[in-house]
Image (cartoon, rainbow, N blue to C red; front, side):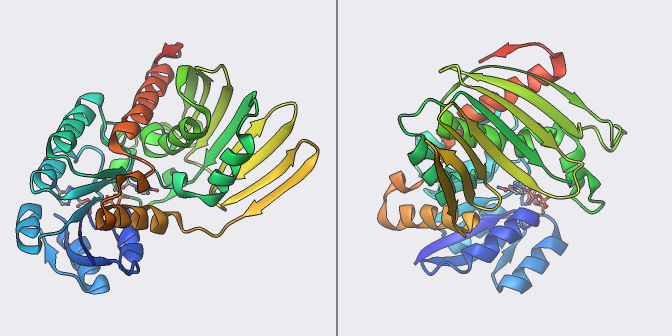
Length: 324
Ligand SMILES: NC(=O)c1ccc[n+]([C@@H]2O[C@H](COP(=O)([O-])OP(=O)(O)OC[C@H]3O[C@@H](n4cnc5c(N)ncnc54)[C@H](O)[C@@H]3O)[C@@H](O)[C@H]2O)c1
């Protein structure tokens, strides 16, 4: 059994605890949050020892791995406390809010030689695996991606998501998933440009993020991508379409489905993966068997996706082309 602890028992923390407690090789030894109400709710639901001080939790419960599920501005001291105790770190996305912060986290992880994983769960999808296999050796010409969600329409959603300084808005919170998955499949980014707007939910003192963004990416291999992102859509769509003369594939990453045509043949693949389970299982197996290669999203690699998010953010703010 791998001893696991978790910091941040909010929305995502409780979601991950749901899966963590179902993994046979994981023993959840402690959870921590500053918010007593959230903490007690999670402690009662999952029957785990609760702490309001993460250093005390780490010293008393001796976990081998920690799941860090706090807002993106809260990373460095938590990672330092864990890594300096030799505890392997799973860190929710985005890896950090700024590149300076990301570099500090990376230094701490490298200095202490602990395994690390970032919550880019789409990398664990079987539909993604299938898509990558089909595209092997083929020339993608263009990609049309969309993530349409309704965060800004939800009155009870944590307020920090709508504070641009704390969350970074749709770019850092959600589009970074698409940036990471696109890099994973297509390669590194050369330059970006885009525009943003608030036609449905205007900005106020409490809502300083955009409700919609659209941007264009050119990859180093000259593949082109357009991405449409909404936080004011009443359903959920998360799709990438890969377009060329020989194929047109649609990867529905929410549903784990790959459909379309390739070389005149129909493609139809569906898998019921539970991606949060798979990313946690990989992290726990990596710790148990000392096999870091099981982790598909390392912190160092996630920082490359953060650099894309920062470039897109600059492009959206300036309406200029930003090169990486
Ligand atoms: N991978 C995904 O699909 C996904 C989905 C949702 C959220 N997330 C990410 O998970 C992270 C958390 O998001 P959330 O939706 O759970 O937010 P949340 O506000 O619901 O929960 C965050 C919790 O962290 C706690 N916290 C903050 N600082 C702390 C500290 N120093 N010590 C202990 N606890 C502390 C807060 O009290 C809060 O309960 C974010 O980085 C977010 O982007 C990822």
